[in-house]
Length: 339
Image: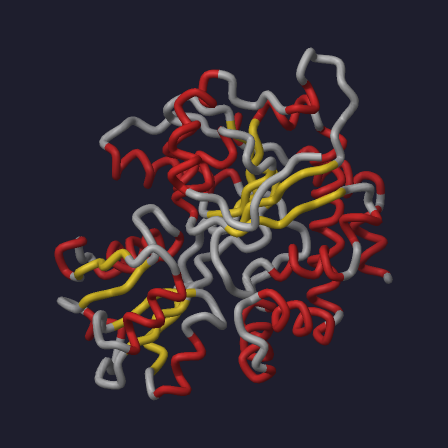
């Protein structure tokens, strides 16, 4: 079984990233080319909050184990760490904004997007009581975790929608979402961008919700694997996707179970915040997490624009919906609708 720590250091990942790119996709389970599939995996997710309640419920309700998997959930500091974590085999399945990993794919890292449970940016902006509208943040300091994070990408989508540029706001990178909340409370920034309930809890101290970003379509928490890992350990990835589909069904049907998991894993056990978070995300979680190729194409285009690189004309090779299609053909997804 692979061993990882609860959180992964970006320094460790960065030191192994370049070497890993050359042999990306080779895992302990396929060394030598004929070993048995390893049904243990580490799944990396990229921020504290309720967005990953599908993973929390899968762990708490024993769905991973039921489907033959031994899963360790690991928190990365942000989506900007996701590429290095995958390429170094520190995690085998990564959840985060596709825009961050697309940059690596354009440099030759062999990635596959295999599920997309939320096809929208799912963050909120909370700020000082004096901020009366989203337009009022022009010229203000916005706290974010790190460059390339989901929050960073969400703000970029907002700026593009308004016809603004990065010069119209001051991005302040604070390394983590808890640090964002602290910075807001101490007056170091005017607003922060986080997922519920992390920033939402600032309302108890008089801060206000400025906006959310859910109207912007994006591959915001795409589940991503290395191409080599998908090939060598396909049964493990298939079991993960089956678990994911089942747990999305649980989220929609069993609010009590979802709220219990949110309170346990999201950084706040406050019942009112958990209820708020559930209602926020229940409208965003899909029933079938098929990856939309158009959103992946969008992710590559956005990543290319930021790096002055050229996006591939066809990014469909990075999308693999066959495992979800297999579940549809088998009748498993329909059975969840009936249960």
